[in-house]
Image 1 (cartoon, rainbow, N blue to C red):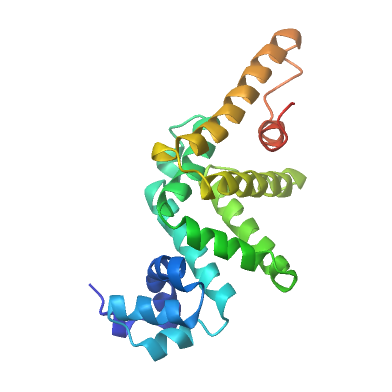
Image 2 (spheres, one colour):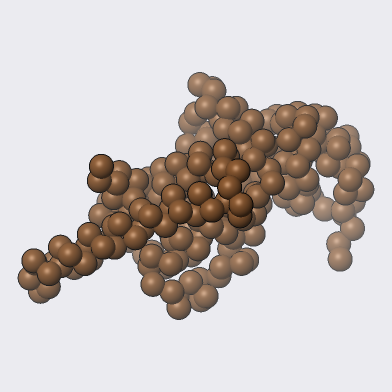
Length: 219
């Protein structure tokens, strides 16, 4: 195992990110959280602070990137290929939620920071990148406008699910799981009923429409 003192700054950022998120529950996304995480993992606090010279957004970005990497490790493309598209999307989102379970307060603080006017553009870019990672793992190869539409919609769905997750006190985050599952189930039922009335030679299932209805469910 590589000694933490031998890590590059980029490697150190990712190694410390989950521990910083834990510390942010009490200390916020601050230098105090960096020092706490560094001491916990045996890293030099001064070097750790240098690795996050961009401040809170730098820490939050590293945390999200660490979640991306953990998700990809748990659900590689070959494993997802065995699942129907509905299960791929659900599994990818759920993997991300599982990896931050217990860090809800850190999530709330991070959300408030990302919503600041000066951070909105960077936050949107980070959200897009995570959505792109999910779609690539799910096997999406679209290069036309659907490429952008799918990622935009999925980023929105994930953001809405995070909002429910952050305040969910139900056992096992049951309410969050139901929030996502209800929309998936509703869309699938709608598509099945519609298919009975349409010529199957002219109409095929659209993943873009599917995700669009996940974000904007019928009222």
